[in-house]
Image (cartoon, rainbow, N blue to C red; front, side):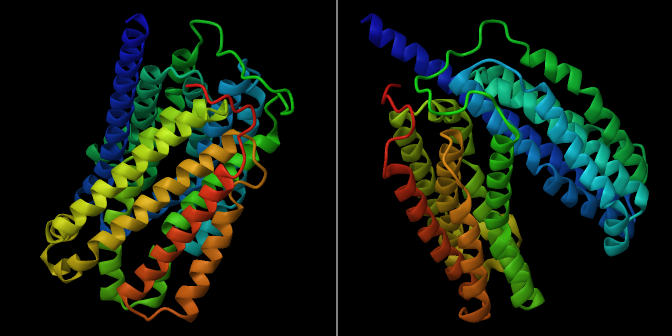
Length: 409
């Protein structure tokens, strides 16, 4: 009875943690969505284009922050302890430095004011550095605090932009406020991550280096970049290969892809610390949940394809309702791929993102050389790539026990 009650309490805590992280993710996405909505009403078209471009660059520049978070979370869950301050600051400084050096080139190529690109470097420093504290909270499985930290970071990243737009500022003024708010929330994140108890005990196994190094962070950053690249590759190819109207239709369909991709990501966030300790049962349970989520979303898009396209793009795109399940299936398969890539990063596998880079090259080759120049042609290439990539990642993950695998929950 006691054991059953303990399991029930653990399930309740995990469910509450999952709900909190989900809410934090939704708030982050809502703030990110609010910026272009306000911008369209407050800025001239040229100013809106400049702000949207620099925000897209900011999303790319933030990738090392995700990699830092994954690396810190996996290291902390597996080995415990700290020692991440210097490496985190170096990672953030290097990313910001590269962005600053690229500022003149970006300004000339994208017709952006140099002030915008320099401010981009400053806000990038804050965003990447925040990954350290998010990783510590995730690795210690303090998910309620993690959800709070995610919300605080979202307020720092987007709050200044929203305030600037509300005050009628231009792109430079808005990004300046965003930089200030992004830097201002860092002490609060550090306070939230301050340990209230000894760090998680390390898992058994002495073959893996116990000190977090730049190589671990670079591996995680490379995996994050690979996941971002492959998830947007078909959309970029559609823009290149299709007519303007067709590429617009593909962009609307890709909303379903991104929905099916990101809907179950809370599972990956929650399970990563257990994956780092080689918990095979947790891996299987997470995979089952993500597959179930994907099946539900694909089924729903098949049943209500017209409604999905009406909500995503309007009545002008209802002719694509028949392929709605295919768009959702691509996202559902990549959700599986992302969880398995995180698993291999967390367990110290070599070149965990290599299959994704190969798959991206294969998708580009198939779309350029073989696929018909239609929405369906590019979409089928994307779906085939997702199927093959998920199969390869599953084989690589399950072909041998993870380091330190105990099979315990």
